[in-house]
Length: 208
Image (cartoon, rainbow, N blue to C red; front, side):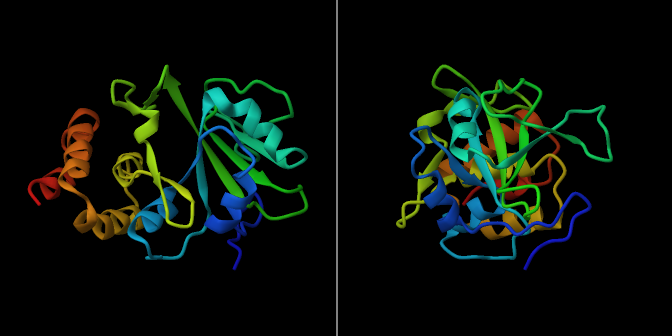
């Protein structure tokens, strides 16, 4: 079922459809957002109104080529036009550093299908945009399901969700916590202590 939105209906693709579409891309990518949590857990825990795919900024030209004639709308940073807070991301166009979020649909007449999240890197390391001193090797950013679908590591996805957790983010944390290894818990705890030292999740990440 599609999600009604002032800027157009969402009918998000499911992870296998996304994986098939991204298969020709040689650059790395990962399912992110709530679906990343569910792929880690191996089951769908809730409904998803969209589907996020994390890509690296350094690979944006190859990603744009993959989408070919799609309608690609890059979310503008504030201040922006609230009536349409996007601009077209054209073929061959460099993506400026302020852009981190892109809505994608096969054409302007069709529903939104995929949301791209653009991550910054330095050499072989991913940088957390809200605090670039939090970093990780690109090789350890995620895992792959038995069906071959790449997904973002749950501790990294929870860090993204931690800034202003909504009800669904709290639900994702609650579902994921029992499945996190001691190593994943420690990484998330260390990152939260740096980024949000008063975060309520911190006390829940102690121990096993």
